[in-house]
Amino acid sequence: MAAKGGKRGRACVVVLGDIGRSPRMQYHALSLARQVSLEVDIVAYGGSEPHSAVLEHQSIHIHKMQWPTFPRGVPSILKPLVLLIKPVIQVLVLLWFLCIKIPAPDVFLVQNPPSVPTLVAVKWASWLRRSAFIVDWHNFGYTLLALSLGRSSRFVAIYRWFERHFGKMADGSLCVTRAMQHELAQNWGIKATVLYDQPPEFFRPASLEEKHKLFCRLDKSLRKPLGVQDCTSTGEMLNKDINETVFTTLVGTDITSKLDRPALIVSSTSWTPDEDFGILLEAAVMYDRRVAAILNEDDSIQEEALWKEMQSGKQYLYPRLLFVITGKGPEKEKYEEKISRLHLKRVAFRTMWLSAEDYPLLLGSADLGVCLHTSSSGLDLPMKVVDMFGCGLPVCAVSYSCIKELVQVEKNGLLFSSSSELADELLMLFKGFPDACDSLKGLRNGALEMSSSRRWATEWEEHAKALILEVISKNLD
Image (cartoon, rainbow, N blue to C red; front, side, top):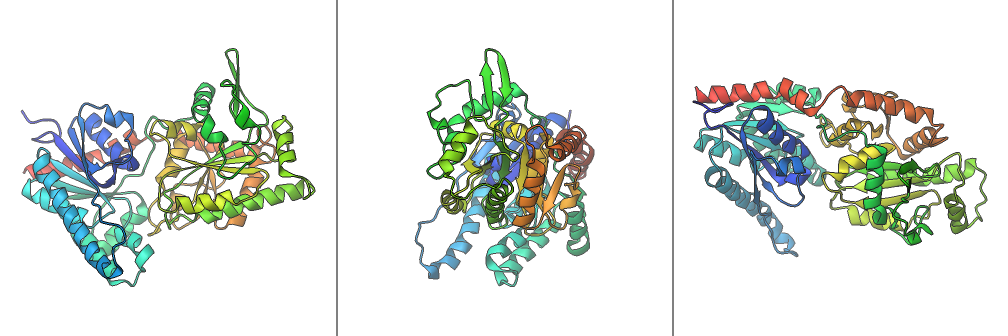
């Protein structure tokens, strides 16, 4: 008797990247295992731990490839050769895993980008193993390459040809927006099904008890400044009371939120050129200066004296802001250095990398999310905003062509095009924080309403499952 979903009862999820930083592909693996009862092999690079739901599922098997490494300080004249050698090595490693190391699947489901050499290797593997082949289009790889090489580069043109040619060879396609679906159909000759990112069940608002436990775990990181001192570190570094955090207090069995707590703002970033972190820093400086002007504060007041007054329990019309920036990436150290040189009275920054279990709790504990994603193609949507909405967290996001497919202005979030606009939004949303900020509360209600309406399992059941089963069935004929 055939296994449910295909004669082999297996699927292979392929990611030429860190599986721990590829949440959508982790969710695909969970759905294939839970909703189609398939054994699932994930072939990807290691680096960050996937969510415990993936690690603990008995039908999901992770096969980690090794990142190809080259000696540092390669002479410039040899760099084109390295660029050619790297994909050749990746193809060989991928083919080894896809054709020999794992059992033959009914279907390969591959993330794009990266396109080269992933689509080439998966197409060859699907032909050799007589398996179906589905591409999940998150973005266009050639547009990401163009960020560093320029749109007119010959390498970008070649990359686009490979991406289009092998993308058309797939037995089925999924994509993340209607705008991308239209582009694929009109200019690439590819029929794709839209599968919107939706948060899985573990993205939800956190209870007060969950918030307090999280803040206790993160207490040292939350109090430690990137510079010498700031508005959330002075004096509090000496606080050894494990029952008190920057945001909450435990007295007996009762947990309360501090009235003089800073507003917690979360932004998740990959620290890459398609997210201009400078906008957030400039907005923070503007917020700091504008609040000082509104409150008629004397410039001669020492920062330490003001911070001591803040931490004594005095409330102000505008709160301190604590930005927690999560993620890993190439430009992180550059911006940490810039942050350490800022001298702000009411704004502090922390950078950290959280576990897959603590990240949803942080979003569920925050007051606002900020998204700096601009999209290299203008056709994808930031999954981080989907996660924020899943936790009932309102969002301020950079405005670009298709972001309104996700952010409903003045209902669950706001859009901005400059640092000045973002600063204006922060002033408007946090005036009267924490109790008298009606605009922020309205956006939170909209985000909560959205979080309860759609979840990943439902979206996948309605839009991905039928396509995958159809592709598998056709491949059996």
